[in-house]
Image (cartoon, rainbow over all chains, first blue to last red; front, top):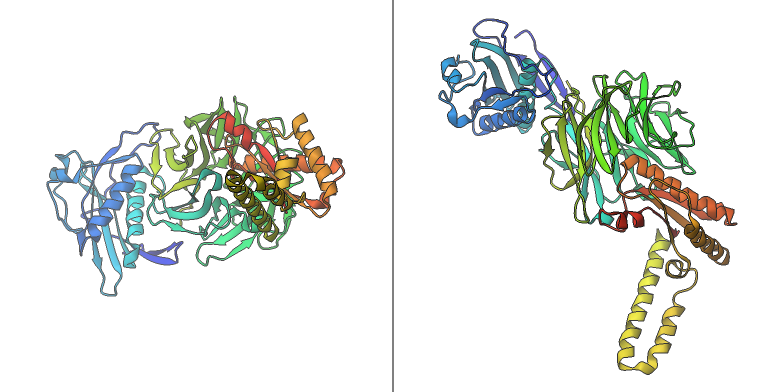
Length: 439
Length: 162
C-alpha cells in the first residue's frame, strides 16, 4: 500500500484512497479504447454488484454502469447474462465465464462499513482476455458520500482504459427555470454531472444568469438582478455568502474566472456600450481590456491565462476575436458564414466552442484557436451556451424549445459530434457550467 | 419599488371603478356618465396608466438594431412633452430583445436600445437625471409565440415610472 493519498473534494469531504495490490502479478494489459477515432465502438464491460453490506454495493455498480454507458465509450453487459456472480474483491474471476458473454473488461468490488463508521469501497478492473488486473483502488469515506465514490471508481476505470482524465466526479451549475415564459423565475442550481444530487443555490427572488465555476469549484460567479441592478456576483457554495464584484457604474455581466482564480473577466455596460474589464479579487484593481463602440462580451481566458477569446459586433455582426490577456493584439478568428457567439476555450487549450447562428438556426460547434477547422456538433431551432467537461471531451449546452409553453433543457455532446444526450433536471434548465475535476 | 407598487394600486382602483361603472350602466343608464367621470379623476396625467394609454410607453426595434424609426421618434416626442408637463415623474427605460439571440449579446443589445431611447429623450430636452436605464435582454418577453409576430413585439424599449 505504497500510494496512499487524500483527495480533497469540493464539499469539504475527505476521501482516502489506497492503491490495491495487483493480483496476481503486475502486467501491462493491452486493453485500451482508442478515442482518437470519431465514432468509437463502445467497449463491452461487465460491472458486478459490489459485495458487502446492504444495497450499497448494488447502488455503486449502478452509478458506475450509468457513468460508463453515458460516456458512449463503454457498453455495459446486461447483468442478466452474468454467469459468475457474487465473487469477492480478492478473488480471481473465472475469466472464461466473462469471455463467453463477450465482456472485454470486468469490474469487481466490495463496499463495507468500516469499524470506525466509514464506508470502505474497494474495486478491481480486470482485462478479461489477458486475464490480468488493470487497476485496483480502495476508498474510505463517510457513508452518505457513496455516490461520489461510484463516480471516482468510474473515473478510475475510464482513465485506465482511455488514457485520458475522467470527468464523472464533477458537478454542473446551471439556471433552474420555472413559471410562465413571460415571468420566468430563474435560480442557480447545482447537481452531479449525471443529474443527481440536485440542490438550489439561490432563492429565485432575483433573476440569476450565466453561472461559472472558480478553478477550485468553491465559488460561482454569475449575473444577479438583485434589487433590480444587474451586476456580477461571487457566491461561495459552502457558506452561501455573496458579494457584488466591484463598484461599477453600469451593468456588469458575462463573468468568468481567470484560470488562476485571481481575477474575474466580464463586460461592463456604460451608456449602451459594452466593453471587457477584469477585476483582481484581492487588490480590487480593475482594468479595461477593450475600448470599442461595439458590444464586446462573453470573454473567456485560455487555460494558460495568456489570451482571451470574446465576441464582438465591431465589424457589424457578432464574431469571435482573440486578444492577449492585456487587451493587445486583437485578432478576428471566425470567418465562416453566419454569426458566432459565447466562445469557450477548451481545458486542453486546443479548441474553442461557440454558439453559431445561421439561417435562423442555432448551432454548437468547435474551431481551432486560430479559427480554422470548424466543426458543427449539433444544430436545431435553438442550441446555446457550450460548456466543456474538465477533460475537454464532452460539451454541455442548452436547447431552447419553440413556443409559448416551452423551455430550455440541458444536453451533452461529445467533441466528436457523437453521443448527444439529455441531462435530466427537475424543471427547465439553461446556462450550464461544468466544474473542474478536483483531485 | 414602493412608487411603482403604488402606481399599480392606482391602476387597479381605476380599473375597478370602470368595471363598476360598466355594471351600473346596464341597470342604471342615467348614472353612467358620472361613474365614468369619477373613474377618470383617479387617473392623473402623471400616472402609469396615462403614460401607457395616452402617451405611449414603448417603442419597437428591428432585429439586432437599436436605431429609432419615425414611429418610435413620434412616441418618444410625446414622452418628452409629457415629461416636461409632469416634472415630478422620473422614468426607468427598460431595453429588451427577442429570443433569437444569445444571452450575453441580448443583454448588451437591450442596454443599447434603452440608451438609444434615453439619448433621444435627452435630445428632446429631458434632463438625463430623470432617466434610468436597465436591460433585461431576452429574459422578459411579452409575446410568447416563437414567430416573428411575437419577436417584433419583444424587441422593445418600455418606459416605466420610477
